[in-house]
Amino acid sequence: MAFWTSDRNRNHNPNARTVLALCGLAGVALTLAVRSHAAQPTPQALPAPGAARGMDAAALLGKIHDRYLRGAAFTLTFVQTYAPAGFSEVAPEGGTLILQPPESLRFTYNGREGKVYTFDGQKARQYVAQDRQMVVKALSLEEKERLPLLFMTGPERLLARYSAASTPIDAGEDKGQIELTLEPKAGGEPRRLTVRATTSGELRKLVVLDRAGNRTAFTFSKEESGPRRPASDFTLEPPPGTRIVSE
Image 1 (tube, rainbow, N blue to C red):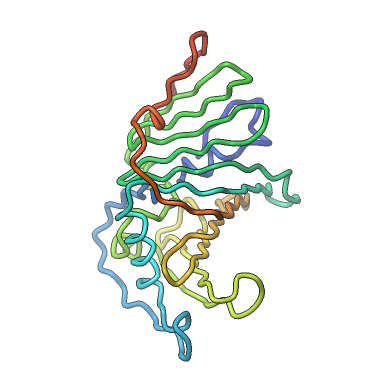
Image 2 (cartoon, one colour):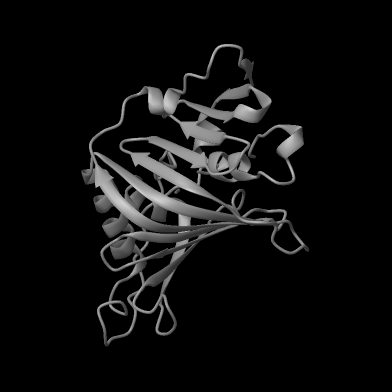
């Protein structure tokens, strides 16, 4: 999505590092902006019976891509957890995510700090109302390629960069969903991406494991589609008196 954030929130707010260094969840630029020219591997089919068992990695990625590319904008509720390597998860954060193709996203966090994180396809912005500060960072091509949001990236491009395996969930509250594990073929960040989705391509969970062993997880619910949002939702226009920091 590495992620950048203020020193004050560095231990408790890894969302900028995870989402941005990554982002693979518009999709990631929202896409991963993969530039690899490697040939697409032949996906390994899962054993029957059952629709979930018959859906391989390429098919599931195609479902996700088609679902979020064809809509005007999507709003989802999210819960984010973060576990530093060797430690337990810190207190979860929650809020609302807006995804808008081809490559815009906005995380609005609940809580008195008033945190908002956006990406408009070129620049990432992190605004903290309590600090009266907004950090703006233009992403290089290399940084865009590390974004983990998968939603808008075509399956062939993802499978050129990542080894992928899909596993059906056969029990528990997630029964009927499919878990997809992606690992970069050439190493680098992130070390592993794990995605859970329904057979129709609706995202339910994204887990990002970085090279240092830090783990960030997003759980999604209450997805709704709607009309396109104005550009100002993603470029952000903070109130007068806000300190703007460029990185």
